[in-house]
Image (cartoon, rainbow over all chains, first blue to last red):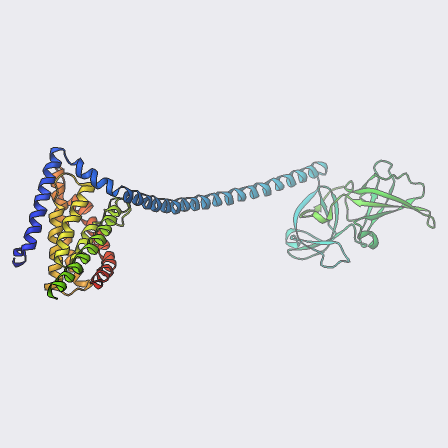
Length: 275
Length: 181
């Protein structure tokens, strides 16, 4: 304890003890405000600076906390948004399916004997010379060549080629296709067939009619059921123009098919029907 | 000739004391304000670190036991004036620690960081004892384990961290002040 025998230390200790004791007594007697005020006044500007620093740190940490909260909220909202989008997409798909099935029901009500198979369009013709589609139905589903393919709007064409799980549909616009047709308004009959030149415009020709046939632009053209492919009373399209061939003395009309070929996703293959 | 050299020495000593006093006053003022504002709200382990204790130790360690003792009394009074509960224990505690730090650095150990850490650990024990005394004087009943876990241990951890950080700037300050001699 040699160190505590130091004179300087003893003096300091004495001062410290006296000061502490006096101030403690003053403090307990309720006179502490004097020294406190003096020191308080002295450190007030520093305290202010300290408070500012503290507030700054607070603000800084709060900024990051709020940023974190915002990020969490953003993530949860994004998830919610994604889920809602999924639900909406599912609802849209279901709605489209519902609409499609309703239209199929309409066909079945009109033609109760039809046995139909729905096919989804897998691809379109790869070349520019033909308008055809490949569907996801084939022999495994009971599809055979020359079956009629329709949509609720009207005739698309016929099955020209078939595989085990796919089939190719040739449309009315192809030159090889021809359908026996009639006009319900006047009873005029003829044949709707594809034409290479016309197919580029999305129309086909209605020919083999008498020169004095009662035909007007706007007349609806239906299948007559003659031939072995197409059943009767299916809408083919609408007459858009009429020409008279002076050499053969017959009328040739241009028919715009009821089916919009550019927007086909599903088709119905008629596997069987009764006349 | 001899009288002139004594006068010169006295002037030199006076200027040294003044520069010491000014620098240390500013340092302790800043640290005490930081302790009662910034670190009272933001600390790593949930307790306010005793920056003043660390500074007193460093002053004693680098500037000698006399400087440590005087600084200890002043700093203790300052911190008690800024937020005491009534009974003043810190001036005496800091006086002891400042003086002992100087003695320790001069006689018992080299002025190295590791030896400083050893003394810091001792100082933290004493600080804990002072805190416990304050708690005893302030509260009529308390759980010792609760006090240890939620008050003494965090305070010691925060103060130790602050002490380790303050060691380097105060060493630089002491080196600069000693150079002025």
